[in-house]
Length: 455
Image (cartoon, rainbow, N blue to C red):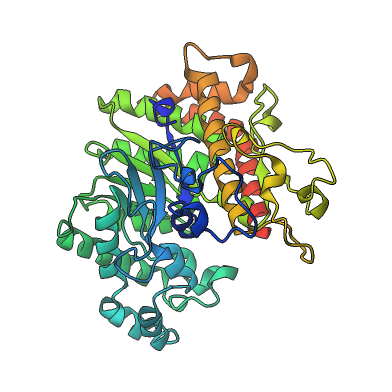
């Protein structure tokens, strides 16, 4: 599917390490509780492998925050990838740092020592090995990567429920900004010592009350290869506003890549493809890339045991979101005593039937799937999310597949206004119009994110 993304903004699933480890195993090495269907090779789940008989896409997002060392110690699809045929964008683990859930014991213990003494935490951060280890990991395994930001939402004053255990929560916003700048300086001074040359994206944050301006002013002079927009900066309208600001400040002049955190297709695919096309014209570079990520395909599989539905996009805005179907937890389906009223999407349907996802030997559990089933479900969902991204863009932009009768009129208007917006033509009027046009989609995005978090 890499070729199908040509010219489009890239959707990058946020790869989970357990899937990455599972997808290199032979059938007999898996934890499947019953027999894997004949003719199916578990290693086809490795979508980074161009020889997979299911599907292939060469790019993905992978977070170093899932690891506790400078190396990936288990067999893993990223560790074993063909570096000439794949593109890995790395996340630096700021989320894990912000929630206090660091997988590395000594690093966590170091931060725990000062969790109730913000001045001591601030003064001793550089003695924690987290940032040095993160830089080495990113340089070893990724092509592009986010710099290490100290997430502003970790500050206690913002009352985020997922930060109650954070060792950073007593720090002020200004202290978090200062430490992030120190991290940028460390990355800038120490990069290039790994076995490959990773290109870095400077992270922007904004949680209101002037924090976005303060952050940007503190980091904009660093010379990295692109930008990453997270938090309030990464909202659909806010991200366009920030991209225009960076453009006007000439801080996109040398940028190769912009990544937007925690976004799913298909609406984001179309909006950011339109932005990418406009910015490529203004910058005069066809290699300028916008990407966006989400972990939703894995969450649907692991938490909900749900299949993402194949796209059926129409002019009705309600169809421009990804629906899911929860697998019935019924042992009778596994035993073929009851018909399964759902099917897998191509290409999995060539090799597996619905009942193959059930662990036949379990008859006393609340769930009749197993780990293998959930990894197969994840593969199905990953494929489907890519299909939403590609098909949405095809309907809007592809001269051969274009069909504007299947695209909401307000989404088409957003696309039509994009060139004028970035060129500065009537930008105030266009921005006001964008605000009206994007509100329903931004509400839809927020509902989907909240639904996944609750589940």
